[in-house]
Amino acid sequence: MAKTLKDLNASEILALAIQSEEEDGRIYADLAERIGKEYPETAKSLIAMRDEENGHRHRLIEMYRKQFGEHIPLIRRQDVKGFITRKPLWITANLTIAMIRNEIEVMENEARNFYAAAIAQTSDASVRQLLGDLEAEESKHYELAEEMDEQAKTSGARETEDKTERKRFVLQIVQPGLAGLMDGSVSTLAPVFAAAFATHASRDAFLVGMAASVGAGISMGFAEAMSDDGVLSGRGRPLARGIVCGLMTTAGGIGHTLPFLINDFYFAMYVAVAIVAVELGVIAWIRHRYMDTPLLSAAFQVVVGGVLVFIVGILIGSA
Image (cartoon, rainbow, N blue to C red; front, top):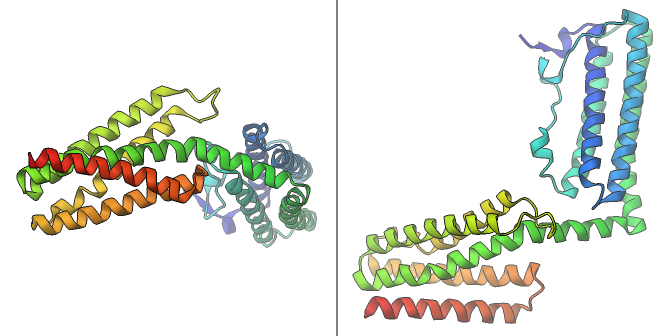
């Protein structure tokens, strides 16, 4: 059964602190290794933080050896109720550079709070002094993280890293997502409205739209995932791109399909047309925002394509 922090004695608190400092140091090292090529300045900061955590660990071990001997029991974060936790590696692997910087500050703040609470758990003067010193140093680390961020801004390194992060975001998320949204919104217009005008039945249009949306999502997802392994292009992991593209394709088609759940066919048609206009506007804005396409040009291209497909669907359905 897990204990609370108040249930731990001095030796257990030191053992827990040693384990925590070691884990934090490894997290900083892992993050630095992952982002070192694209974000060298932030990686340097992470390495400096890792070295600081290793120094804390050595001091804690020396204190433990002096007070309690050579054997250090294994007490992990998850063994203590309410203790600070860290994100699993498969989650931190997906953090953006801004999220990583924020995570550093959160980690240091949590460590500081732990030492502040741990001081009250022991009456040994030397242990209390060490824990107090580490609490003060963790406070300095929190300030250091902010100072490093300010230095990066002043030197221009932060701006360079932010540009790199935006480029990565566009390549790995925006581009596959936009491709899927465009395909889902535009390519499903013809079958949905053809079925609607052919049958004048909302249910039939809804079923055709769902089939077209889900089918297109699966097809686009696989196509995107298999098109590029991302190693040379920098477009990221194929699976992630495929999921983004597939989901956005499905969402683009379902948007103007859902109105046909309304039994009144003509009212459902008006709602669906309004949603199509919103979808095309969103696509144009994304192209303008992330692809540096002039807004009027983006709107013209998207609207013309969408209107043509819409007309084709109506003509075929009315034939």
